[in-house]
Length: 394
Ligand code: FE2
Image (cartoon, rainbow, N blue to C red):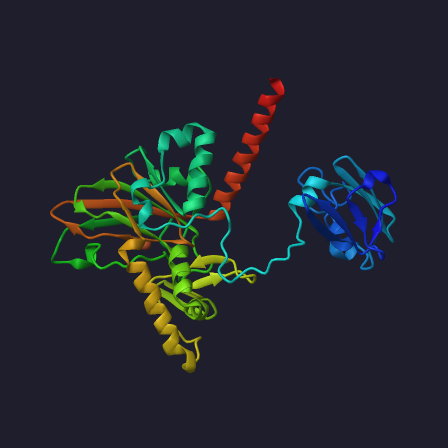
């Protein structure tokens, strides 16, 4: 390593062969490869000033790119690359925010810090927002969407009691995912003990449509009519459930996350949907990214060896028992004009049974989490820009 000769480059060193530079800040040293820096250059030949998109491909950057020199100017670094003989400027804050020189091997099933796991303890404090408030003020909208992102579900109260109001909820953050069920669908249940098919009896908590690939990542269920006693909605944090399974026996977690289950739906003549995905889905670095659990649409599992199948079923049974455990469930009731939004990759939902007379009518639709996260990012950036302006005026 060589310390850059300029006194203004304090805290920045460059490897002898120019293959990387290192920034010492806040008691930590972060190294950045020459090729990584060059690929992430922010100058106008590399990135479009208009939309931030990269204008070059990796083939445009010499494979033997190295750092020739670095000079520091307050919060920026000017880096000269060879053999292009190109100098480009990086903000040190940007570099530190994107540091990848981490020494930590993460364990399978690690969870993003923005997520908060919960169990039945959340029952008295169900995340809730008001339809008019989120519609009228961007800061309240941001708070609501942040709750959805953190807890994987949120109730919305005070909405209009009118057909297709569910679509207005999706308009607040994204776009409807249309499926073979249409842009939205009706969930009508009438109390009629002679026909259990139309009641909610016996429904285990589940994620919706696991037979789709990609699965719809958001579901909204909107109540238009609710005159029957019972019929409460119930949700279970699927991430908390699989983490509990992992604590009890890491091998159960491992067998369910390392084998594909199969899901299938052929409920009408024109539809035959199939997906081959694990019940516990991990990113390649072990991040817990999704749960698919639905006894009604689970197909024959054929991707587990004969030697492992009995153990797989043991794990599957235990995961189901954890999901069914009342200590995991949060229940709440929806009145007409109320709905709940659920992250269908994480939170399972079910409906409790009915009693007495009456009817229940909900409309549901699917949407996607990427648009919801995008709206959060845009609202947060706008809010930060506004408070900067506010402080500048003072
Ligand atoms: Fe469902």
